Length: 387
Image (cartoon, rainbow, N blue to C red; front, side, top):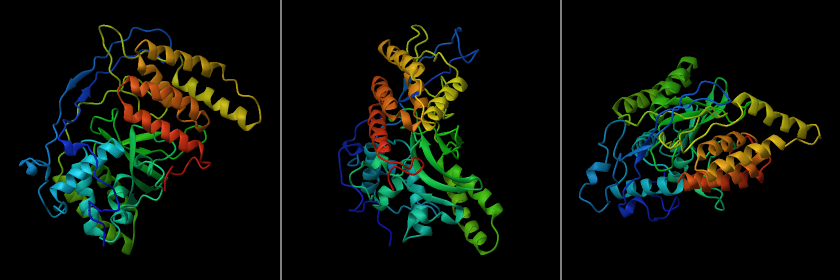
């Protein structure tokens, strides 16, 4: 049978939500206007405003019903209140995920009903396998020497993305993940990796605001393509996903408005003060130009030549200066762009780690350090860092 949510083989109890501490408020941002890809311009400035979104309820409180979603055909109450607090605690401490536990509990409960012996494989008739945090529930960690947040993480997953499923599509195998700009705010969207090509690595596309919505849309596409007996099984599972998606409440997050683009296409969101013009400054090179330059470094290395790192050194120096002058947005964009090249892992970590710390996103700093260190030890850049 499947392991319960609080399987002794999956994780111990540590401090976190169980302490009853308040969840970190989410941030609201406005977009900075741009007129050209590079060069000087008059920029509309961004102001970061904080507004509380939720407060964690102590597990010893009599308000347990506040965190116990009502049972239904698609989302039965299969776990105890104590188990839910442990689950939420470990999502926060091990994956830096907050505000999405209700949806993940719904998906897991549905998976256990469909396939009690192997819940992570429950949606495979729809071409989808649960992983990452869901493996934590199932106690599937095989590399005890690595932290949980590297589990199922792929080479080009930035710290802002937590992989939750691997998916077979008509265009090839991809993976899905929750995306958030800060480890202390709930995910605002579910994104999918784009199948890599030589000149375009680490690209993502936005699927939907929630995992259930992404599963529903994907499931419908799969069912349309299937024939025979496999289609009937997929239809039955899709019916359960449909029911769960209809019952679920879509979180009312502030509209995400990136201040700048990145080569991954996800963009960045950082606090920006309009009156002082502090928080972000534009990179001195356009995205296409930077992408072509990074590719030229790789091509020179592949041909046995000596790459010219002069421009790269200049950009990194400017990024560090921007951090010193409290404009971490520039270094964040540059660091995430460099992240699309495995050959630049050391430069990426050295730039992004202090940038995340300056932004107060210390968990992301830990993720990028461990991620790039593990990546350098692996030769297959397209596989998950931990299997």
